[in-house]
Every structure is written in C-alpha cells, then in structure tokens.
Image 1 (cartoon, rainbow, N blue to C red):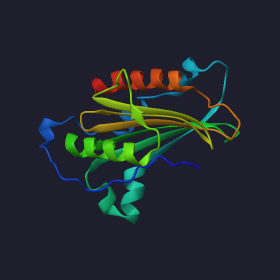
Image 2 (image 1 turned 45 degrees about the vertical axis):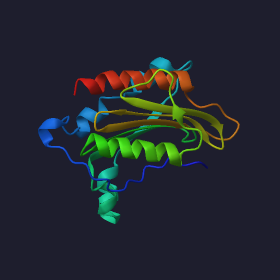
Image 3 (image 1 turned 90 degrees about the vertical axis):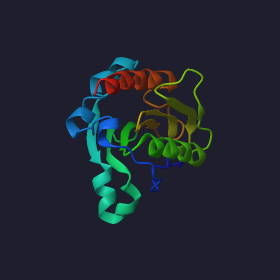
Length: 181
C-alpha cells in the first residue's frame, strides 16, 4: 500500500509570528471540513466515523525533532462505518512559508505520480489519481505557511468514496475557509 509521506525534517527559515497566519486551533481545524461537506459531493448516502488526530503531539512523544518546525499538525479521518473506505484530511501549520514550501517539494518527491495541478489551489498544489492498491486520489496544496492534504483509501477493486473531481471541490472549499482564519 502506497503511504503518503508526512515526515518532516527541520528546514530553517523562521519568520516572526506577526508575519504569518495565526496557529490553527483544534476547533478551527475541525470546522474546515465537515461530514456535511463530504455528503454534499457524494452520489449516495454514506455514514462516517470521524476521528480527530493531533499528529504533532503524537510525533513529539517519539521524535520531537520531526515536528520542530511545525506550529500544529491536525488530521481528520472520515471512515465509512464498515471501516474499509475513507478520506483523510490534514493541515500542517509550519513556522514559515519556506518550511512549508520545502515540505511540499519533499511530498512531491516521495509520492509517485504527484504532479502540479493545471488550475492551482492555494499558492501551489499537486494531485494524483491512483485508484489501485488501496489508494484513491491525493490532493496537496500550500497556503502561506500551511500544507493541506486530502487522500482517499479503499479496498482493491472498489471505487473511492469521492473521485478526484469531488476531492478537488472539497479542497477548494477548505482553501476558502482557511483564507479567513
């Protein structure tokens, strides 16, 4: 199974707090993408089990250096009730735009097929539609010092819960919400 690389190295380039966006709180993050948003792009009704993850806190307990240049790293998992298909959404809030840009480039190198989007989302964006080996589609974009990622997963031979076009619609919705934070 292909795994989207979210490891981070410390990549210098700090800016003062006043020069960057505020740190995203857990509540703000949870409001960026909701079950209702996903249901609006589905062709049929699906019940979801939603889980929140503070990936920064989880990583700090094992290797604090890998999250040293992150202000926050939150994730939501929207799994079908049977647990076999889902959508994962995350936002990494870096300490600088340089750190975010460097991490974005690393993600592109580490994710086969991830290519820049013709109509970008945010400052820069990339996507890939795999639909095999348990991976559906992946969209990643930067907005200032933040990286936003979406990916779908499903069993081999099944369709993802949303296709690449619907995932792009969700990404553009999150982009607009993120701009006002």
